[in-house]
Image (tube, rainbow over all chains, first blue to last red; front, side, top):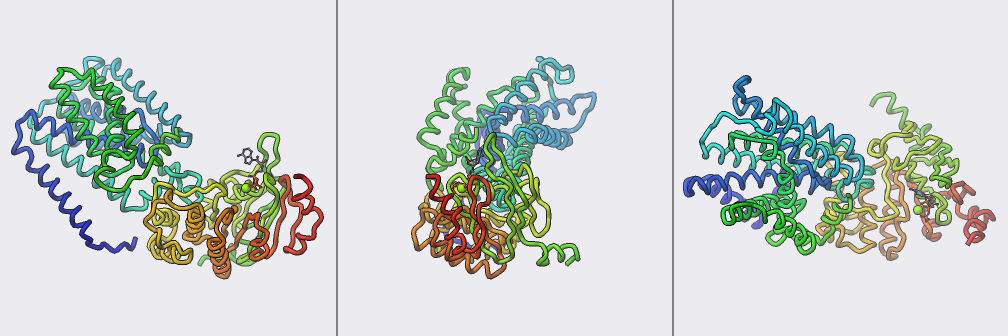
Length: 325
Length: 247
Ligand SMILES: Nc1ncnc2c1ncn2[C@@H]1O[C@H](COP(=O)(O)OP(=O)(O)OP(=O)(O)O)[C@@H](O)[C@H]1O
Ligand SMILES: [Mg+2]
């Protein structure tokens, strides 16, 4: 499209800000201990996961309650392929993980995304639950005992891998949603599907594309996570809290915004770690998630990001998406 | 240009031909064996009492709903039963009786979204000229949800213009708007019809109908009860009965 890039002061400030964040994130590991580095690595991962969920939940407006399935598909694909009988190297496992997650997303999204959002929400939830149960009984997933991966104990490697994956996700989403035709298609269908169709937009296709993209990014993080933790079991990579956390992070940061999920992801993950280190477990964490959802929906429909950038959009977006259910 | 597409655009194929379409909803026959053909640059008014099937007829033509029987042709191409997006890309565009803007998007993005499946390189240019034609340049960065009812109608009308279709269906696009905005829409229709765009307009405002429509089709209870120019229709007893007799 013939858009003329104009260097307004606002754009320059924004570019400087993003540059500063990138530099800060790049040099961060030099200044923190290994415990904090692990938290930072986790924060990058959760920011990326929230970004992924937001593509289908915030932009297409289809609430997925089954994203843990894609995280698990990524984790198990990498773990299985890295077992000594196959012996694939880590980076080689990423492609099959992504392809498998896309295939599954198309198989689930194809039929259910033609229907109202409630069918999709239930289908994704049921599928994730089924996959979780399967992983506990199948042999090649190691059953409830799970799988161990070859240990690669280099925290810097995982920090920078997560950083690159997360940055690529955000830049990719920004380019795709804010700077390309795909963004108009997806936002149009979210806001008014019959109107979007009447303008020639192939809504069912765009919805499935968005779900597949979202699933692929989620699986990518699952793969990295499995290699990072060196041990996975069904609940650690497919438990429903993984999805819960993604949903709350997006709502907290700003549904359907580019940078909101990053903000929500980082803040909530730090909160999670703080509670864990202070109280020794995370039992009170789930009620906190519930309270956050209620407060955000009622008082901050556009999330924390709306306090920093952009204007208030009122409650239209969140009620539109919840209304789709 | 291939001979096939040349033939499809020649005068023997009208831009829009509705052939004996019917649509039932449960026990109701919303549209009952309706036929209508419109030529390039023609403005055809569709009038009739509430619930007579006008909007349903538009949905059948634009693909939002499938006819139970009958056919829809665009430039001679049988598009009956095609998905809505595909019919839309064949060159038809519509507004909705219930405003259907993308409320979380700006006016600019609403118009650009309309151009997304067309000539994208010229999208911005088309958007600018539409903004100018409809005199809404000053609200281009407003969210659609922040607009007044009349402005929303204008943007919805703008969305169909940006697409550059061959046939435009307007479902009560001037209902409840200020006379100034109504005039802007009227002028735009007059201007676009000269470029060969065909219009079907559903209107309850008889002054407007008289001013812009070349001919009228009157519906009642799903059926066509009269056809002709404004004066013929105005003196038709069946029409008077349809409008006055059942209230
Ligand atoms: N989706 C639907 N399901 C069931 N019935 C419908 C549906 N759409 C329209 N109808 C019925 O079909 C008939 C025609 O409705 P339609 O909206 O086409 O009328 P209209 O001429 O546009 O009326 P108005 O002037 O009030 O807009 C009405 O009886 C209506 O109740
Ligand atoms: Mg109507």
